[in-house]
Amino acid sequence: MAEKKLGWAIVGLGEFATKQLIPSFPLCKKSKLVALVSGDPAKAQRIAAENGVDPKNIYNYQNYDSLRDNPEVDVIYIVLPNSMHAEYTIRGAQAGKHIMCEKPMATTVEDCEKMIAACQKAGRKLMIAYRAQYEPYNLKAIELAQGGQLGKLKVITADHGRILDPAKPQDKWRAEKKLAGGGSLMDIGIYSLQAARYITGEEPVEISAMLHSTPHDPRFKEVEENVNFVLRFPSGVQANCTSSYGYSDTKRFQVFGSEKVLTLDPATDYYEHHLSLSGKEGKQEMKIKEENQFALEIDHLSECIQQNKNPKTPGEEGLQDVKLMMAIYESARKGKPVVIKN
Image (cartoon, rainbow, N blue to C red):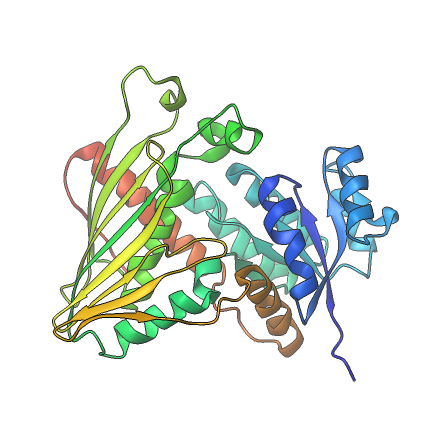
């Protein structure tokens, strides 16, 4: 017998949800799209019709809490601006649903803690959508780095950049501090931060950071453009990380070991990855089967619910990143390193 697929509701129908997440559901083995939540009724009806969602399962932000009365919905996926994650996660848990929340988990440590507490109180799973931790190339990079194939790890570099264009609907809210919580760090610098953490398997003990925004550029009136930060890990590994809203698409990291250097570029693309190892023997390209990382992470949470397991990237993982990003901002503000108490 085919295993029962859990029903998912998507909250927020922006470009990421409509172009990446929703098209991934047909590839899922344990999950199906059954409901939509949107402030745009016409758009919701169109997306529902295109994806076989029953029109009665279209909700708005006012009647969102009535999802509690819909037994078809098992999981809610929050795909809203960052500052809205906490409210809709908490309300979703109170409606008795399991939660997948986009990264960053929230814009404050306190909100992250409230989200975790609400899901625990409701007895519901909470997972943060760190897609790269489910993507095969990133998993291979972790295996190689932690398995000793590079020798002793020395240094990691991780860089993420893109052009912020507030004229585009998907970027308008990202230029607003109230909605985004911060600039390039919160949006894409978190990928550099995550890479350093999951490649080493360690938590940083000290952070140094600098911020810079182009003077008089209206895009950076409220949020930062460039962030450079260095993480020091207990093993002695240092990670040199950057994020920027000022240059074109960059999504890469390098892991320098005593024997070999691993390069993943692009590292956090939606569809394509390129992995190589360099050492005394020359350069070795590694080919791995590309898989839909969105379907993989969605099915991971469904499986965890079905088998009552803890997700690989629970709320606590999101909380840790927000704590570390706050330390990055603190270091930049004070102009000196910040010691991290783990």
